[in-house]
Amino acid sequence: MINFVFFRGIVTMISDFPISPNGENEGCYKLYSVDDGGGTMVNFVVAPTTYFIDHSQVSVGDTITGYYNANAPVPFIYPPQYNALIIVKENSIQNVKVDYFNNQLVSSDGQLKLNLSPFTQLLLANGQPFTGNPADRNLIVIYGPSTKSIPAQTMPYKVIVWC
Image 1 (cartoon, rainbow, N blue to C red):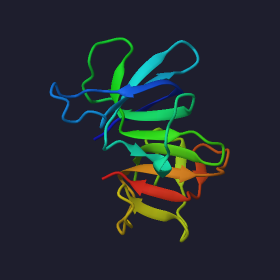
Image 2: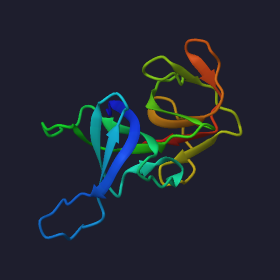
Image 3: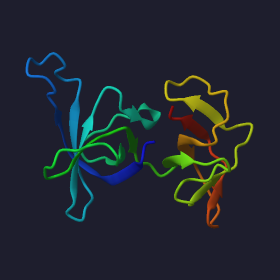
């Protein structure tokens, strides 16, 4: 099971990240340096398989949230370097939650409950329709307003099933 953890900050640098000595994949992998504004830095390795919400293009100066697997091995270096699974370019018109949702569609941290409507798009990461039950799965949830209750409840615009 993936243990999604996130880091949010401003992109301070984007560079190529070589993964082979002969350069066969040169330009395919990027390294995003991200600063949270409080002095904490993280580097994200962005692979061709990294999922970008809404296929957003990221530039230096953008605020992003990068999700990675806390159970995956990482090199013991500073700043920490994580393989980015999902990147969200922050904007004020939508919220994003990446987490495991149980059979009641409540996130693993108990902070968000989904109330699906007939208008909620259920998709796979490749953009194709998802026809199964989204419960008991890792989900990328894109939503707008939510209640102030605990857990907050929302009717998401889009749910992407992370198979």
